[in-house]
Image (tube, rainbow, N blue to C red; front, side, top):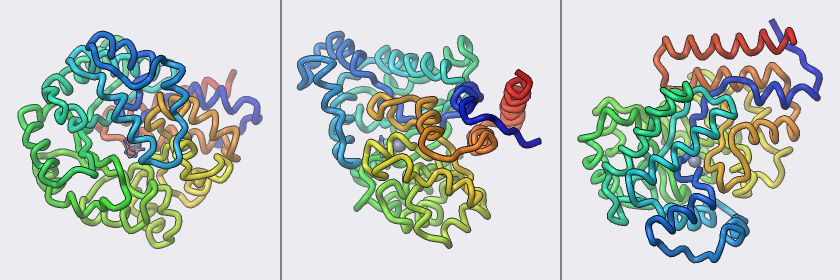
Length: 346
Ligand code: ADE
Ligand code: ZN
């Protein structure tokens, strides 16, 4: 059954749909208010006098200009409790956006390089994940990201540090400065991670060329591509993404804030859906990019000719593209179908 809705009902429909978020850097959910609270709690000084001046600095020209401030913000995180509090704040926010599954990226190297214990990072995050499941009904998992601007050796050391905690995260990813740090640099680390039974994803084609998407697939053997918006420049790559149903975790407001697209009306999300790409919508670093998941959906509904059916496809894709068990995927899809049926009636 195809659902047709009047355009004015689309934002409400988009907001209420149950969805998975698959591309959220938990350090990117750190709101300025929490940065200041944690700075005070941990006696860390930050080079901004107040929340307003920190927020005013969130004007980015590209990925690197954002990363510089993002790593500075993360420097206030010190204790297990800090990591718990950051993730718990995200889950409370996610719940209001009808997120029922979240796969959170975390960047251990950002913290271990400053002397924070790996266990403090992962145990704080896991405690928040357990609470999200029991108190909010959100299924939550962690994906450990390697920082690609650091060396292969540093990534190997991080994987080694993570080994005693293998049951606490489901996969590995690759983030940070893309251009000049091709996936090949981490071929051996990803091979080891996969041998440990971990799932694999990577940022590719955010600012970097389609060639990085090809090598994320062929060399790192990832199951999803984070961003991937540059893939549409390469028709052979699009054919592969469609034929093999390789998901892209697209982050529209991030792309806008980091000047990947000048205007959301020029974003290629709708085109991806027309081509049959398994695209999903995500927030990336919501505290920095002007909105959480539902704000991304609303902005896309405003800027792009998305239909109700497109929105259902995006919600379904988010669960299909997730690393949930087959039983959970079935249950989550039923949640989407039940919402659609209720909305169509009322
Ligand atoms: N780390 C946090 N957000 C990121 C992004 N959009 N791209 C690469 N690395 C990131
Ligand atoms: Zn990202």
